[in-house]
Image (tube, rainbow, N blue to C red; front, side, top):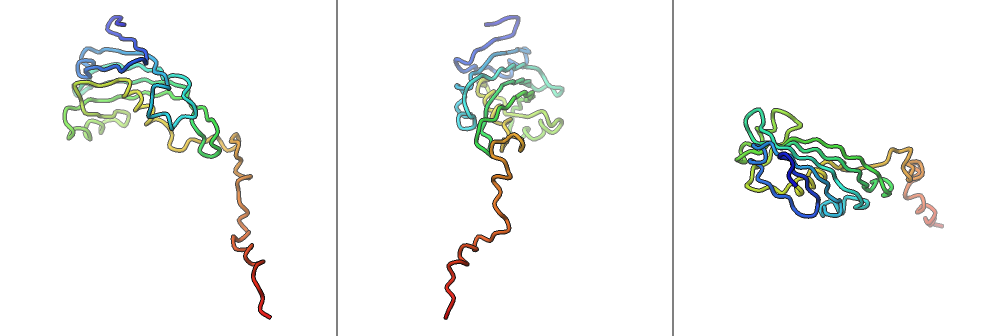
Length: 177
C-alpha cells in the first residue's frame, strides 16, 4: 500500500527495495513483522509470540551517501541465563545505516558517529532481513533477571566454600596398623 511516498508492509513476504533509490526518494516503510517469521531468533527467544514494529526511512547523509534510519519496537521474551525461565525484554531501537559503494569505505563511514553503521550498498535489500538482523544484534549476550527477582537465588546456588571437594575422600582413608 503506497500513501504519499510511504509504504506500509505486513510480515507476509520479503520486502525488497533498491536502497539507493529508497534513500534518494526519502521513502518510508512501516509495518509489523511477526516473531514467528524470524528464523534466526528461534533459538534466542523463550517463545515466538508477538511482532516487531518497524519504520525504515531513507535519507541522504551529510556526506551525500544514501542512508537508512531504522526504528524498531518489540516486546520479546528471552531465556534468563541464570534460571532459564522467561525474561520479558522491551526492545526500543533506533539505528542509522549508511550505504557505501565499496568495502574499503566501511570503516570510514562509521567513524564520525558511534550510532551510525555502514553496510555495502546493493542493488536490492530485503528490509525484513535487515529488521531481523537488527533485532538479533540488539539482544543482550547474557540476559538475566535482577538478582532479587530471579527464581534461582544466588544464596541457594552457592556451594559451601569452606568444605574441600576431597573431604569425602578423607573418610575413606585406611590407616595402617
